[in-house]
Image 1 (tube, helix red, strand yellow):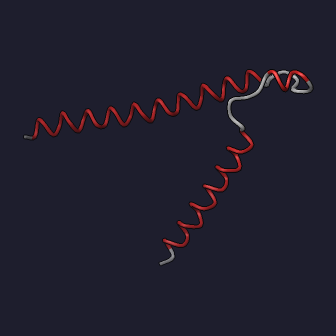
Image 2 (image 1 turned 60 degrees about the vertical axis):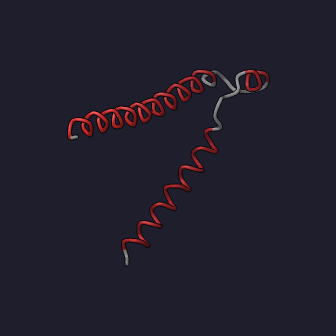
Image 3 (image 1 turned 45 degrees about the horizontal axis):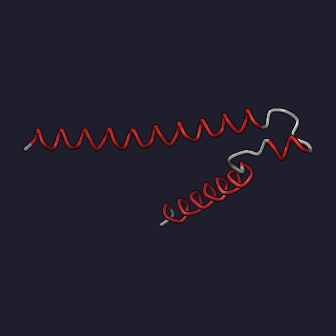
Length: 80
């Protein structure tokens, strides 16, 4: 019974770790691609033909909102 739990637990941990690594790798590749596409002057026709995959301004705003909300919730929970 212990061996079965060890094998199953190890497989679950490897799967979870693989998902995390895959998500981080995907985010880094998309960021690198977008940085490469917009590294030239982004005015006029260049801006239209070299559009980014992700709207990084929206991502930054959402990330800031998430951090702010998490901090406020942490303060509220820890003050009890």
